[in-house]
Amino acid sequence: IIGTSHEELPENGYGNQRWMTVSGNYIHILFPDFNGYESELNYIRSIDGGNTFTTTTLRSGDAPYYSPHIECDGQTVAISITVYNNNGLRVISSLDGGETFNDTLIVQPQRLVDLKVQGNNWALLGYGDGKIYHTTSSDGGKNYTTQNIARKAADDNYYADFWTPFSY
Image 1 (cartoon, helix red, strand yellow):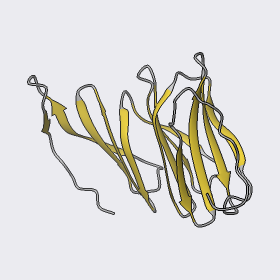
Image 2 (cartoon, rainbow, N blue to C red; image 1 turned 180 degrees about the vertical axis):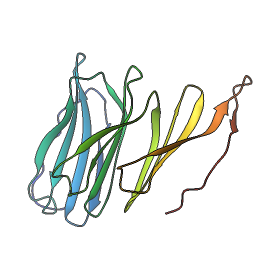
Image 3 (cartoon, rainbow, N blue to C red; image 1 turned 90 degrees about the horizontal axis):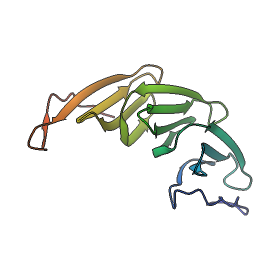
Image 4 (tube, rainbow, N blue to C red; image 1 turned 30 degrees about the vertical axis):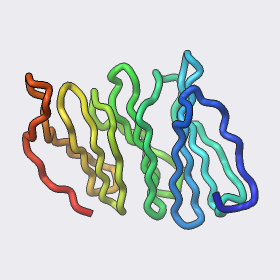
């Protein structure tokens, strides 16, 4: 990390499940914390290249979080998580460099595989209920469209339903 100071990340019960993304002098770090009873989704941000950091808890008290991802593009920060017990795939997003966030349930139940952000174009890949889903937003996470692109057949293989390419 750029800069002269750092903030020690606590042991979180998830081993090495911590993520970081950088845009200019902005450093965004995400890490879930689970103490065996409740979870927290923590976010650390530096706006000065790593000289100083602030910590915010984005969610707490839920079941454990899985498959967290964080992406940024300029002032846009997108975080995606799967909430345990089929509580669904959520996207927590900021359009002001991590100053404020919106939390949106995308689809339920679904587990996240990947998240990509480029400007207003966002793409998520997930699975659930024996299907593979592709979810997109072309307006910076305000609205989402989810397509079932493959389903698991009786032979345990996945076969394509349909695919509409999402280009950046």
